[in-house]
Every structure is written in structure tokens, then in C-alpha cells.
Image 1: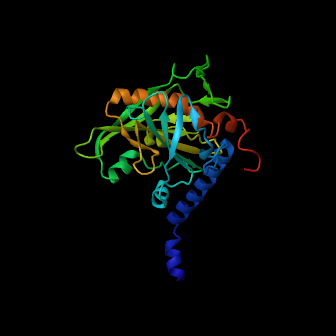
Image 2 (image 1 turned 90 degrees about the vertical axis):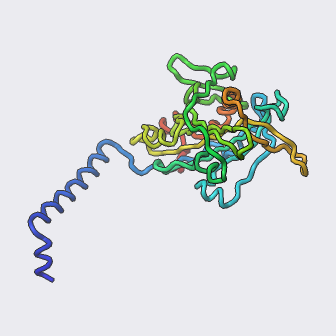
Length: 286
């Protein structure tokens, strides 16, 4: 045994081991000196998602969809919202008269990104068509939305609270599909909020500087919107989401109208990153 140990503990091995230990010590020193935070802490929501305002800008929430335990498990977070809205300015069966909203919030883990429609919808059996990037302009669609000279975008929530928006043109991912071979095309849109910034793809969240190495906290949130139509349930008489929109341009316009009114209400639930970086949030003790 002693002879074997002497063979292993050769001068080259000893040199390599010492260099490895020195490297580890140097890395720890650099991390400490630069104030780098490699392991992020979770940051709580300002409001539970279910406390989001149900009426804003001509929209009203008409249905809350409950996920099965299996779907919620695959989603990877208990912090999710699945609501259906009616645009009260339009007939419910007219394209854009209904909107399905899905929000999923993740925090404390900066290296994973949740399921996206390309995976979930295809797994349910739809035929995938288009998948790509678009932009949803919000300017001019919400009278309280203002872009200051410093580029900061703000808008008022329905309770009068001033909300910081990441941009007045939201980068989005569009996924178009056919639920059946004989059905019209439908489109769903999504984007991510990550530490106060908006990204139109999960790759953008992973590869960008959204999660700053100096930040103590980290979160990201998937926001998914599907404009479409509503119908009455034949048994309960309640409104249900009947399907998406087939005309791409009209769907993007309906998406922009909804986000211009609804994004401040969603962001009222999420951490304000200005407050997080200034140390005003989360409250002491969290």
C-alpha cells in the first residue's frame, strides 16, 4: 500500500495538486474581492399573482383555469396564473374579444428556463408551423405610458401606483400552429422578464447579462398571451376561451392592446428591480 501511494504521490501529481488548490484559493479570492455572487437568493413577489387586478383598460377577467397537478409539476413552479379575459369593447366571438394569459414566476435559479409553447403545445398533438421573433409596440395604446428623456418607461396601474416597464416595445416570441389538420392557424406569444429586463426567448435569458453577477437576487417570469375568441360553456353558461386568431397582423395588434393595459398590472406583482438594486426590496428579514 505504501509503495502504491508513493507511485501516486509522484512529483508531477504533487505539482498538479498544488496548482489545483492554488487555483481554487485564487478563484475564491477573486470572487470575494470583486463582490461576485455566484449563488442567487430568491426574491419574493410583491403581490401573489392571484392578487393581480381583474379589470383594466377595458378588459375583465372572466375565467380562471386550474392546472392539473401533473402540469404544475412539469411547469416547475407553484407561482403561476392562468386567466381568461374578455375585451368588453368587442363582441366576445370576434377575434380579439378574448385573451388567455399565463404567467409563471421562478426565483433563485438563474440557469433554468421553463417550458415554452413549442414544447408543451407540440406534446399535446398540435402541428407546429411558425416559430420566431416579433415586437409588440405599446406606445400610444395606454394614455398613462410615458417614456422619459432618460429612456425610462413608466405607466400607472389601476390603483394609481407608478410601475417601471422594461420597454415600450416588447420583444416577443410567436408560435403558430394548427390544433387539427382542418383547423385554422392559431398563434400564441410569450416573453420573459428577468431581473427587470424583457427578453423574447429563453436563449436570451440564458445568454444575456440579465442575471448580473453582482446581483444578490435573481428571478425570471414567463408571460404568455394568446388573443382569440370566447364562447359560452354549453352546460355552465360561463365564458371559456374558444381558440386563437388566424390572422397574424390582427393577432399582434390584439396582443399589443392587451399588454399595453395589462403589463403594468402584471409587473405590479413582480419585484421592482430599481428597488431591489437600491436595497429597498425585499424587506429586511427576507
